[in-house]
Length: 226
Image (cartoon, rainbow, N blue to C red; front, top):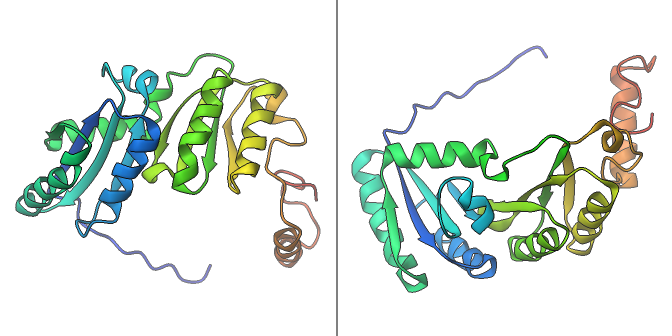
């Protein structure tokens, strides 16, 4: 690199969250889609099923959307967003302190309540397919939650071959991609620990690697076969 350009933005003055309790995943995705499709600049949209929500002290599933900006703007837009969500049930509004704590937990995957030997997968699909991935995971004895309106699904559970194969198969059927974020050594060292690489992308990667590392000495085979 010969030049780096950075854009620095101030931290938002306030953060607000609207919360719906008790929705199933399919209904939650509809609510999240309504929030993300609104003109109120939603910056976070997630759904935590009952098991994931319980890890954060909630008795029922929670569906949440976040807005960040100046205080007056956040108050106004959170109120308007609560109006949009009123058709889905009783809406709770969280202030900045509660919002920051909740979204920090979502960011850090705290709802997954990881145990020794667990693996963590991130699945990227169309938001409408997120609930089906969660249903599959529940049937396989896995925990999980939806982020980014349902388009990202974080899953965790015993890091065995059966669960891994089920996630990979369900993701392929949904036309998405998966990534293994954490796993025991036995799973990480499997040949299919990474999703298969499309040949067109593999060709580009090989050309880039040949240009920057013609001798092939920089972690050969680290991600894909050299």
